[in-house]
Structures are given as C-alpha cells and as structure tokens.
Length: 403
Image (tube, rainbow, N blue to C red; front, side, top):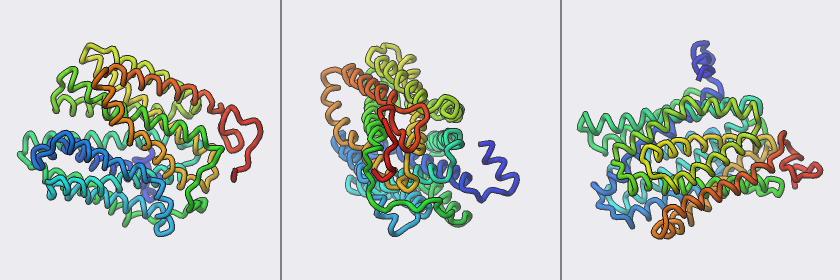
C-alpha cells in the first residue's frame, strides 16, 4: 500500500504494480456484492429451492474447471488485455443479474460472472508472477491480498448500508457492484500502457513432470478449500443459528483481519521461505479442522473461521514456490492448468461430503484435517531454496527445463 501511495504522489503511477493493485481491487468488489446477495435474491426474486441453488453453484464452478482453456485465448489476446476483458465480463454479469430473476436467467448471469472471475484469476496470477521479481513477489502479493480484502469490506458494507438504510433494491445494488468493477477495468484499459511480456509465453497446455509437487499442492488446496467454503459457514447456521447479518459481520471480520495480516504473511514468506510457511499453514489447518469437528461454542467457531481464512492467505507461498521453479515461458499456461487442478475437487467434494454430513458433520471436518496433514507431508518436500533443477527435496540432479 505504501508503494502504491508513493507512486501516486510522485506521479509515477503508470507502473505494472499500480495496475496490479487496481485489478486486485476490481474483482473482489463485484464478487463480494454478488455473493452477499445471491442467496436472498434467488429465493425472493426467482423462487429458488435448495436443488436450484445447488445446480447454480455447480454451474458456477464449471469455468474454473475449464481454466486450462485460457491458453488458447492467448492466441487472440495479450494477457494484460485478457485480464481487463475478463473483469469487464465479470462486472457485466453482475450488473445484469438483477434483470433476469429466473432459474435460467440466473444460470446465464452466473456463468457469465464466473467466466470473467476464473479467467481473470488465472491471467492475473500469471501477470503477477511475470511482472514482480522473485525477491519482491511475497511482499507485494501480500499487499494485493490486503487491497482485495479492503475492496471486499467496502462491498459488504455498501450492501448492508444500502439495503438497511436507503431502501435501495437488490437490483440497483447489483448494478452498482458490477458497475464499479467495470469502471476500474476501463481505467486499467485506458490509463495504462501495454506492458510487454518479459518472456513470450507458451501457447499450449503445459504439464511437466518436474512440476508434480506444485500440482499436488494445488489439488489438495482445492479439496480443503471446498470443505471450508461449503461446510464451515453452513456449520455456523445449522449448529449455532447464525443469522444472515451475523454471517455478513463474520465475513467483514475476515476481510479486516486480512487487510492487516496478509502483508505480514508476505514478509514472513520472504524471511523464512516457502517450505516453512506452507508447513505452518498446514499444521494450523489440521488444528482448525479438528476444532470445527469438536467446537461447541459459537464464539470459538467464529475464531476458528477467521483463523481458517487467515491460514489460507499463506497460499501465497505456493505461488512464489512455482515462480522460483518454473520456466518463465510456462507461467501463463500453468496458471490455467493449476486452476483446473484445484477445481477438480469442486466437482465431487460438495456432493460427496454433503452425504457424509447427513451422517456425521464432524467426519467432514476430520477429513479436512486429514487433507491438511497430506498437504503438510507434501510441503516438507519443498526445498529450502527452490529453483529450476531443484523443484523438490527428492530431486537428485538438475532436470532440463523442457522435461
């Protein structure tokens, strides 16, 4: 944040880092508005039942599963252009959500929003790892998470205040939420030059044997993330009777904590390295998931939820680990592939573990603890100083970059 403010004061604002900050704020705003309203809007305006909502959420994950296809779009668009176009598509999907209050209307707008969201995330990760040096990446990525969290706080607050005190309709709030993202995307499009790629990116799907540890870390992260997203919040409502406003306040607490802590996590990665950071994250998540299984106090449940969210912020270390081991030309295609890998679990975890939940909610969280334990084992295979030719602790000799 200090870097951003300093650049603005000095008039040196047309820099890649400033553009990354703007895009980091643009996406969470419309997504925050969309996610805060979608359940109430679907029920009140489109008469959704549980089956309809399940179908909608499954549809939302399909673009994430197909993120590998981003590599084919690189034949048509530069990455910077594709990132901005994705934000425009996402914002437009949110803007028109309120005008199509039906099952098929929400399917269409959700799919549009999700395409923009997932393709932006894949391309944005690629741009971050290309534009930021290996030494500055941990610190800067932490700051960008903080910027995104601040944007989310503003979005959640705007939703609460407009609906509670201004009498504004959800349709109008959707228009504001998507409109802000589209406005920031237009600023990114018109006020920044195109920054040339440092290395021409491969325009084919890249799967390399030497990245196997990164792929597994992504898969396990996606699996655990689904348990957190689908079941942690559900626990608050089903077991402790949280209201919608209480859930919103918990979301706000998460985002506020991230604003202050995410930059420190970035500094920590720079100080102790990816291996130690990931190990701390996964030990913490093992304890948090066991806590979910045993918790009987609403206050402790909220504390676990916030800790859970903060530990996931340490996933920055996965990005910087890959940045250090990757052939620079592989960053863009691998970003798409990694999103697909992390979304494999999105297809099976909600349905499969939903059935387990009916028998034993605690078993779902014990399974999450087991996943975190597997991730811990994988994290210990990350070298102290990862680099090309030293991708894992099992690497005996340098492996050619094309292997």
